[in-house]
Structures are given as structure tokens and as C-alpha cells.
Image (cartoon, rainbow, N blue to C red; front, side, top):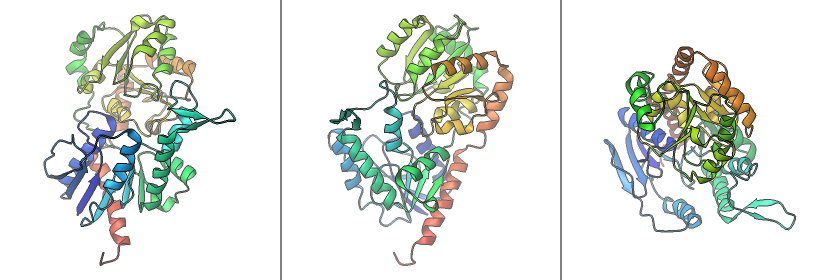
Amino acid sequence: MKLALICRPFTFHGGVETATAGLVRALVTNGHEVHLYSPPGQESMPGVVRHRLPLPRLPALARVIWMALATARLGRDCDVVQSHERTLHQDVYRAGEGCHRAYLDASFGSPAAAPRTATTSHGRRRAGAYHQVVQALEALTFRRSRRIVAIARRGAQEIARLYGVPAERLRVVYNGVDLERFHPDNRGRHRREARREMGLDPGAWVVLFVGSGFARKGLDLLVEGFAGVPDSASRLVIVGKGDPAPYAALAARFGVADRLVWVGPRPDTERLYGAADALALPSRYEPFGNVHLEALASGVPVLTSAATGGAELIEPGRNGWVVEPNDPRAITDALDRLRAGRVDEWSVAARRSAEPFTYEAQAAAFEKIYAEITALRPVSR
């Protein structure tokens, strides 16, 4: 099948980008002809025909409009057009970022996570121009796509509830994970050296936070919750891109600044999972953080919030813990429970829960959707 895929570059080691790269490789392996339409920055991939979309230097608002207009006629000679961006002419839209309206609702619940807003004459906050345009574009994208793919059940429910998308056009396809790169054996391979590099005691209990966008991913909540853990030798390792200053100040206020370790963005996260005893990601909004899968595949239990798609993989007390959003006390309690559990039992259960989520399974699920699309299309296009 000849496929057109519209997306931003996925050369960075982030969750959304990693999931896209794995899917594309699996589709090529299955014999599909993949045409990738992407702005500058996308590296070449074996078996993929790359089409460069010229991206002018524009403000954020103009950039999202440009993307929708610039992709209007792409992939007309392909069997299926799939977009990972909010565009207007595609058969399949993968809502990898979830639903912008739901994101705004979740963000407005906390000043730490709130995006830029304006205040009405009644004192109520409303989204600024950028967010209004994104929501309008999102509504058009949902309306014009034959199939909308959410990456978790929670996301599909949000799209149906907030935009009125009927169930027959909604599908759920979970991300895949590299089960070889992220493996419990990394504990033996990398734990000692990775801890030494980060200045961690070999016997310390270590919690890992992985993610860029600290406010949305609840780092402030985690810092406060971690401060309640009585083990003064425990450490919180923070991986990702963002301004550490507000969170370092918060940690100082709670008296745990010396228990936080900042390492910035890292391409070798598999080594850090090997060094960790638990992953914590108490996000305010998260369609499906790939770090959930990466940690579970690495045999690391996961603490997350009920506001994440990844929570659908967590069985509390077995492979991790799920807390309600915006509740630092619940985070403290969950961390204590994780710290008190048996490492080997957590590890086995975590790994088993990740094993069904392969890139091959992700590609197979999309192939079923492609078959639906081609069956809907008349013989002469």
C-alpha cells in the first residue's frame, strides 16, 4: 500500500517522536511504500521516501495555520493519507497530542500549568488567540477525517465528548515500545555506572522523572510529594527539557533541594531506567506518555496520575500506582508503597505488562484502519 504520512520531524528522543519512528519502521518492514512529508530537520530513514516541507520562520499562531494550508494537496496519489498534525485533508488523523480543549481544561486547573490566557470582563479566564485557533483547527481536523486514532481510551472518550465525534469514526491504537532497548537487563548492564555518573549512592532508592514540559507533567506536584518521603537518602532524578529554577526553589522550600538531581535531556534514557527504582509522572494532562511504556519494559514500576492515558496500563500494587491529579499527599503515599515493595516482583510484573505493546502490533492496528479506508473509497478516485 502507498501511504502518505504528514508529521513534524521525529529525530529527537521524545515520546511522540519515538513512537512515530517505530511505527514508520514497522510499516516499511511490512512492505508498505511510505512517503513522509515533514518540515526541515527530519533525518532520512531506510525505505522511506522523504518530502521536505519548506517551513518559513513564523510565529506559533501563523505556523499552525501554515501547516494546515501547506499540506492541503499532499498525497493525492497515495492509497491512504495519514496526518499526525492538525491538518485538513487526510483519511486518518492520529491524535498523538490528545485533545487541545481537554489539555486547556486540565491546565487551567493549576496556575503552574496554565498556558497563556486572557481574562474576560467577568473575571473568567479564556484561552488566548493561539489556543482558540488550535481548537478551531482541531474541530475541522476531526470533522474532515474518516478515522481519528486516539492513543488511549481516555483520549477517544475526550474527543467524543468534547467534539461530538461518533464512535464509528474513532479508533484506539496504543504506541509501541522497543522491547530490546528498554529491558530489565539494563539494571545489570548500566545501574552502577549510570549512578556513578549522576553522583548517586549505589544503595539509594531512586525515583526517575522523564519528560519535557515540567508544568504539564506535574513536576511541582512530584517535588512536593517526594518531600514527604522520610528516607533522606532517596533521590529524585529529573530528565528532560525545561527551566529548573521554579522547581529547584520549590524543593528548597520543602527542604529537599539536595535530594534532586538534574540531568537535562538525554538520548540514553534506557541507562537511566536501569539506574532507577521507580518512575513518577503525575501529569495534569498526558494523552499517553511513552515513558510509561519505556519504564515498564525496563522492569521499573510506574507512579502516574489518573489524567494520563498511560494509567490504563497500570495495575495499582502490581506494576505501579495511580493517583488522582493534583494530589501531592497521594503521591507521597504511592511513593512509600513503591519503596516498600519487592523489587523483583515489581520488575517482573512491569515487564509483562509492556510486552504486548510492540511496534509490530501498532502497525497491524493501523493496517486494519487502512483497510477500512480503502473499502470506503469508490473504485475510481
